[in-house]
Image 1 (cartoon, helix red, strand yellow):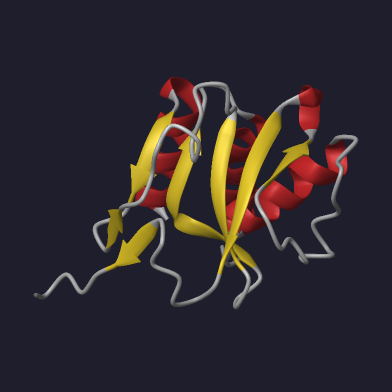
Image 2: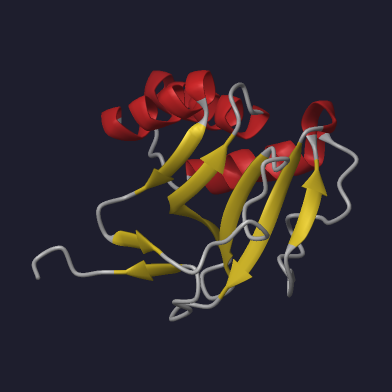
Length: 141
């Protein structure tokens, strides 16, 4: 929980790209993540969740605010924390005028989702074994 909270705080204040130790980004070019993207998330169609192991956000992005809020609330209530980034993304979509509802989770192609404060998230749906953009690697190798 501490590392997840720290990661989200750093991303909220400074923005940037987060890839965990088991992720090897590949196949990105100027059209995958653009300078104008406010945030960029991979969405796993198999588990129906935002991939928490690869996140790209601009400073002060509302999804990170919601994720931090959910973690702190869970800590104060002594409840379990699960999929806080996925739940935060759902809050972001509900709060905005979204062009897709998170509950549908039927994103087939790359699209831009509008949410809180008219900020955006570019969502790229992937399948479990989709290695086109990020390869999941075994850290013991």
